[in-house]
Length: 205
Image (cartoon, rainbow, N blue to C red; front, side, top):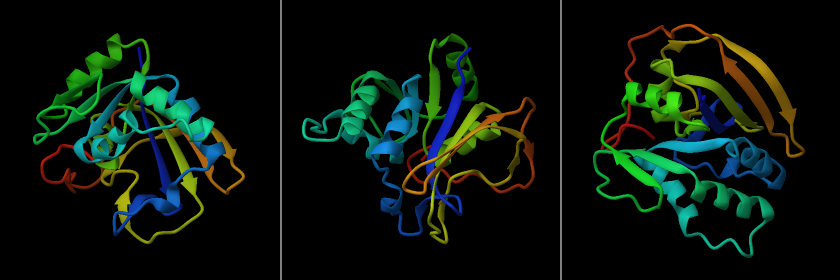
């Protein structure tokens, strides 16, 4: 059975974007980029909300001939993977190997995990919150940047408790630390009634 993986580049105070929506402080250098690529190498399907898809779809046509080896490598990995985009406003995908679904269905994701020969990666803090609450996430990879941004889009959801097992820590030359956790078996425990905000026109971020 495949594993649903959540991966994000975050600030030290656990935000993937600041209050202005900026994330330029998280752009990986070559070493970190290659580590992200190695993680994605075992992924066969990406799950995206509309907003993150709008960012990532640039990889479909981005010229990479004059880019670094890590950028070229990631472009090949992204284009080869299947993509599922959850959106009520996107009529047609703008990339190959892509399907659009109106809502995030946990049972459909469970069936995908049961049948997929490769791991599945859920991208975006908002969409991953749904996956965490449904008890679908099996592994968590956080690339923690040495910066405090003071607020914005949280990397991890509020209102849910899970026990994790630390599997590995790697420190990079630019100060980024990669934390690799496995989610211990057991249903997520709700700790508040705070709803997940998916934003207008999408079920995930």
